[in-house]
Amino acid sequence: MRTLVWLLRAVIFILLFGLAIKNGGSVELRFFLNQSWQAPLSLVLLLAFTAGVVIGLAAVLGVWARQRRELARLRAQLDAGPREPT
Image (cartoon, rainbow, N blue to C red):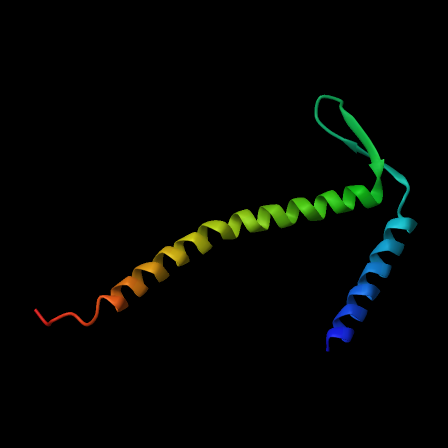
């Protein structure tokens, strides 16, 4: 199984590397106030993917923190033992 995972990783790496080589042409990004930036297409794609991952993780961070607090509260409540009926 470990060999299969490494083989899959190698295939994905080769495909992405080939994509980066084939898309090495320069693109121009135009911003506001007549500013522009020229970079290889593969770099622009990598930056866009990285920005998407960072934004996605930031969006999940609040939910993850709330769930951890709730889990800690429930564990503390469980460790306190059963409550007597009032």
